[in-house]
Amino acid sequence: MASTASARPPGRPRAGVNTVVFAATLSTVRELGYARATVERIAAVAGVAKSTVYRRWPSKGELIVDCLLDAFGPVPLEGDSRAELMSSSIRWAAAKIGEPGVGDAFAGVFSDAVSDPVLREILSTRLQDPYRIALQDALGEPEARVLFFIDVVVGALLHRMGMTGEPMVDADVDALVEMVVPHFADDPGPG
Amino acid sequence: MASTASARPPGRPRAGVNTVVFAATLSTVRELGYARATVERIAAVAGVAKSTVYRRWPSKGELIVDCLLDAFGPVPLEGDSRAELMSSSIRWAAAKIGEPGVGDAFAGVFSDAVSDPVLREILSTRLQDPYRIALQDALGEPEARVLFFIDVVVGALLHRMGMTGEPMVDADVDALVEMVVPHFADDPGPG
DNA sequence: TGTTTTCGCTACCTTAGGTTTCGATACCTG
DNA sequence: CAGGTATCGAAACCTAAGGTAGCGAAAACA
Image (cartoon, rainbow over all chains, first blue to last red; front, side, top):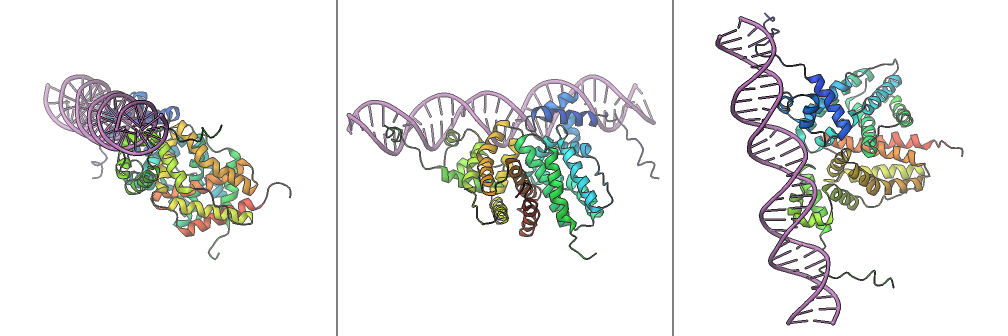
């Protein structure tokens, strides 16, 4: 029945190349910045042909989005109270964006998306939505409030990264937590 | 004496072209997005030769920065209390970034700066610093706090613009004010 | 051994940022 | 009006980079 669907397709199997390409992407972006991290160079670092990259990802933007998805993984929704949940999410986002290459790649693909509606849709759907939905469920907040939360947190982290080239320092991440969490603490609706 | 320095230099005077180019830049960016707003097209819209543009601005990035400086103008530091000053600054920034073309141009040049240290320096020095210094003076806050303030406000506004393609709605700007102003209200130092 | 699919390589197309050159033009001075 | 000087417009040009196409080789399986 369904076993035929899960059967290995014929032909030469794909090489386990995604992991290598993701690593090459982050290291190249970290070393040269987003714009200078060309697909050709990423492929060379990964030891893979450029055409192989374009066979798997239709554009540089989608490669970066996949790479970021791989780098971020799921949100670790830790904490019992809403305040703990939000604070741990903020610190997790700050830590991830601070990882070498991740912040540059994020800011770069974000900037490309400004001029590219297709890429913007992909960025919003594949990268933002999963986290948005998880936060909506965990916090019980309406979509608009969660989107605002993401705008503030991610926007601030990326703005710092873009303006200074360095991730936000811990003291400012603390300030971000202390600014954002109380704002969402006073529940608008009745208990 | 000094009168010779202020004398008009010989040769054909520069045409009053900056205003036209700035207007053409914003309208082209609004219509096509940042990346598709090529210098060639901007020059064509302005009725000016491409070489004329490059004679005045060494790169597309610096053209955009000058254009944004022209579009923003000085911060209107209105309000007696610190709270009023901050709230009016936030609303002013939101309104400016919401103007047609401005947000796209800002987000676009910001993204270019991620990969370009030279452009990042220009963006930070020419665009951010004047406002940072004015806010430092008006609010009496240390540099780090003002930079954090700018990260949060501008970052959130640009993130919304980049993710949705639309400026932040008034209700969310209100929320931004209500979140940020109280955080800075409690003065950290002794009274 | 044959089939199917992927891989690596290379050559190529297109767009766009940026440079260069050159003749034409505007302004001032004498 | 003639000469000097700097800018303008137009066009040709260079280079980097995203993305495509074609082809032979290699890896699996039947």
